[in-house]
Length: 107
Image (tube, rainbow, N blue to C red; front, side):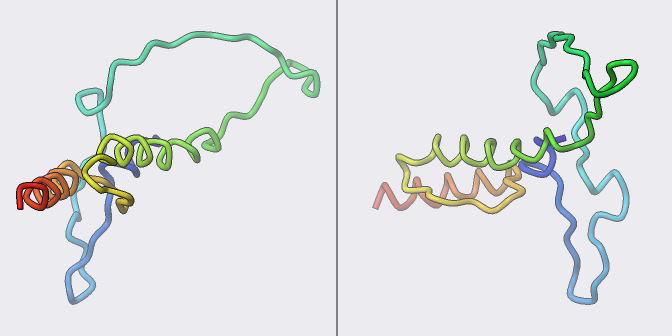
């Protein structure tokens, strides 16, 4: 859930306010094909504040993922002079930055 807004998900509109990605064919929602293989683990620490030890999970754990992913990509391109990128950092946007920075280095 944190990878999607950092790298893929974007809602864009035309000049009349019509959404470009009106279907799931136009709007990339990451699936197992777009995500890395995950290794999961388990830690059992029941909550002492609930009768059956349950805890809420929610989406708060995904708050730090987008900036962490963006920072990793920017860090990987730091040597090219990249200091900032807007999200989502779609593959085409990253490729465009690499082409621009590469051309500037050749000059």
